[in-house]
Amino acid sequence: MKIKENLFPPSLFAIYLGVLFLMSGIHMGLLVFMERVNWSELAQTMVPMGYWGMVAVGLTLFTRKKMKSTYEEPLHKMAEAARRVSAGDFSVYVPTIHTSDKLDYLDIMIMNFNKMVEELGSIETLKTDFVSNVSHEMKTPIAIIKNYAQLLRAGHVSEEQGKEYAENIEQAAERLSSLIGNILKLNRLEHQRITPELETYDVCRQLCESIFLYEDVLEEKEIELETDIEDMAVIAADINLMELVWNNLLSNAVKFTGRGGSITIRQTSDRSHVRVSVSDTGCGIAKESIKHIFDKFYQGDTSHAMEGNGLGLALVKRVLELMNGEIQIISEEGEGSTFIVTLPVAEMKHKNGRKAGNV
Ligand SMILES: Nc1ncnc2c1ncn2[C@@H]1O[C@H](COP(=O)(O)OP(=O)(O)O)[C@@H](O)[C@H]1O
Ligand SMILES: [Mg+2]
Image (cartoon, rainbow, N blue to C red; front, side, top):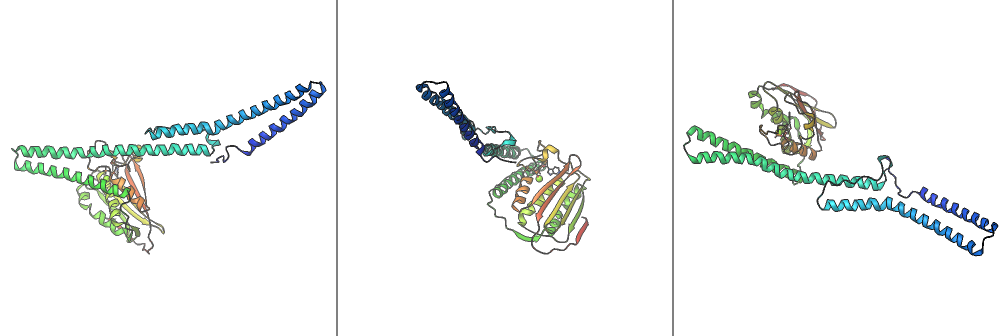
C-alpha cells in the first residue's frame, strides 16, 4: 500500500507560486491598461491595492480551508472519538479521510486508532464473558453437591443410594477442582508467571506415554488406534506443559469419537520441525465453530452435556505459543478432525527410524 507522506505536497506550493506569478502578471497588465485609459492617479493607486487585497484574502481563505479539511476536521473527530472511548464507549469508529488508494499518515493513524479501540472492546467483553462463564460453570456442580448433600442429610437413604449420592458429590467436586485448576493454569500461563522450563527431550517417548494412559478408554469405546511415531525426535520444550497439550488433544479425540471409530497419531520430523498430528473419525467441527474452539470456555455442544469446560484447547494454544509452536486444524463436520502441532526441532541429532503399528 502506498501512503502519502506529505499532507501539503510541494505541488501545492508550486500552485501558490504559479497563482502569485499569474496575479502579478495581471497586475502589470492592469497598470498598462489604466495608463492607456488615463485613469486618475487616485484610481491608479486604489485599484492595485484593492486587487492585491482580494488576492491576499483569496489565498488566505484557500489556505484556511485546506488546513481545516486536512488537519482540523480529522483531529476534531479523533478528539471526540477519544473522549467517547475514555468514557467507556468502545463502539466508536472514525472513518478515514481518504479512500484506500489515497491514504496518508493521518488515515493510517485513524485506522490504527480504530483497531486499538476494537481490541480494547474485545478485551472488555472477554473480561465480562470470563466472569459470567466461570460463574455459570461453577453453578452446576455446586447445585449438584448441594442437592445430594441435602438428600443425605434428610436421611431415609439406603446404603446403596447413599453410595451413589456420595459418588455424585465426589464427581461434582472433581469437576469443580479441574475447572479451577484449569483456570489457574491458564491464568498463570497468560501472565507468564510460569517461565517455561525448556528442556531438550525425546517427544516420541512422551507421546507414547501419553497414549498409553488412554488404552483403557479406547478399549472400552472400541476405538481403533493407529500410531506412526519415529524412534526419537528431540524438541526443546517444557515437559509438563507439553504433556498438557498431548493429553488435551488425545482426550478430545477420544471424547468426540464414537464407538467403533478410529484415532491416528502420526509424528514426523524434518531438519527444522517436529510435526505431530492427532486425527479422529469423530463428529468433526462445523466451519463457523473452528474460529472459536481456542476461545476460553468455548464448547461446540452448547448444552454442556459432555464433560469438560472448554478450557482445554485454550490451554493448548497458549502453551504452544510459549514453546514457539503452532497448531492447525483440518476438520469436516461429521467426518472427523485432525489437529496438527508443529514444534521447532532442538539442536541434537535424532535417528530417523520409525515405530509403527496398532496399539
Ligand atoms: N477432536 C475433536 N473433534 C470434534 N470437536 C472437537 C475436537 N476437539 C475439540 N473439539 C471442539 O472444540 C471444543 C473445545 O475443546 P476444548 O477446549 O478441549 O474443550 P472441552 O474438551 O472441554 O469441550 C469442544 O467442545 C468441541 O466442540
Ligand atoms: Mg478438551
